[in-house]
Length: 118
Length: 112
Image 1: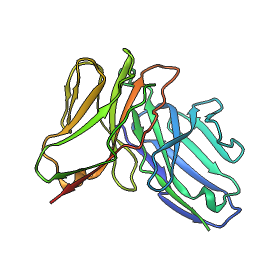
Image 2: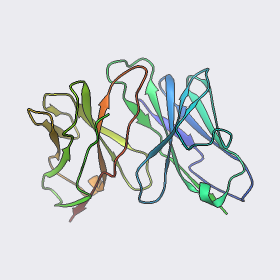
Image 3: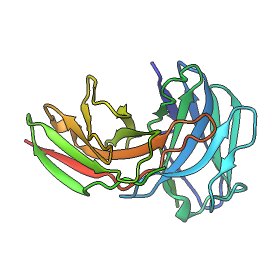
Image 4: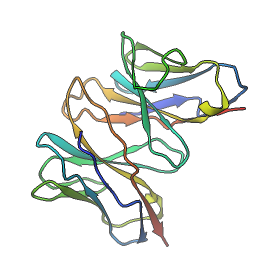
């Protein structure tokens, strides 16, 4: 159980276009989802915390108008990179907390999405 | 949340026990020690966590010192598939504030 999927796994786009990444909890309901970004050989950096039915909370230095997050249901959160540029190329990872598991508050991670902006 | 420090890299022979240390000298009484690992180009995977007592599951054992200022993750019989970056995180579990602060981790290389 506790599987999180991401789609697509890889995407290549032209500079200036927008890219949407989906994060789904497959067998549990997630009240909170997290979006991370990871550059090569670097650790994960939290971008934003997404709560179902409310606006996402962005970390300092993350542009909310550039990285649009929608958490419309308990099993789906989307991250849209608007007007992508080469410096947005990165590995984007989502994670989710199981609504029903209050004992551990464990985060379950998706497999990641590799974004390359040409 | 307390900062953790880990060695940047370690090697271990296949079949031997891999012991990964973590220092968290400023950990507070309500902070748990969590371990995750990340295999190249994949999302992180939860391994184990603990508060004060030593813990064991099907993946690993976690040994926490009595003063809780350090801990060791033990992979009892390392395989090549255990090659990954291992992250030690000190975390307060709270409904309102649950963020994993990721350090640099330890790159563990299992050698045949």
